[in-house]
Image (tube, rainbow, N blue to C red; front, side, top):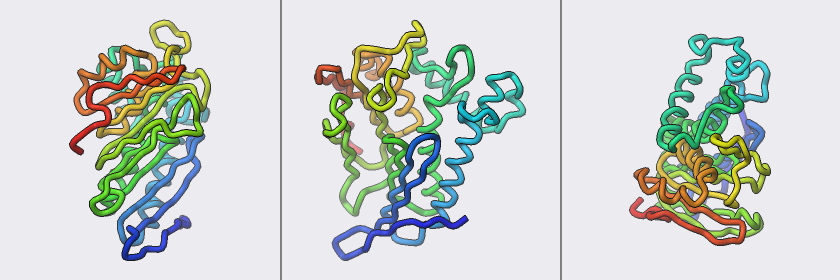
Length: 262
């Protein structure tokens, strides 16, 4: 199926730009390609991928593989092969986060804390296979960035203040990196501490920056649960940094924030 994409007018001063927006997984995904060329086929593949992920992993769709696994109606061996891939990634992230991240909710399989970031990162890889070296894929505010925004100019990403969604708290710049945020600002107190079962409290929000959105997204959730301890924890995770924001507006950043040398 062919989809309509928007293309900015290219001048000698402006970089080429192709943009597309898709609603999926209960959020909004946007694609911003900064390479010359025709990208409709690549965007078709990317959108098909996002909807496939939704059909397989959504815990809100009774017929998804994840829902059927949770009800005991489907064996893991018979599920879509990507389910095993995602659950293995969840186990790795759980180990790295000292058990703070988990793919179990009330004893049921639910890897949604990792799936969106993983889907966006894979979407970026798909664009690379189609030949795009410079692009941004944004899934509900979590972004995987490739290459540059323009020749010689890195990408700049604004971090929204979780205490005041109308203002940008700070920005980060770089090439080939990911940014993910977590907290209750948009969806309320939906993040629970897996050790107590109670909603995580103490922070207004967290943002993690690093090379992989799969991990940055899951790490941001874990960091929100950890609170101030997230700064200590992430110091042992190479290539990732965290910014923790408190309800009163104070911030604490880990060593390496914002990441340098990209």
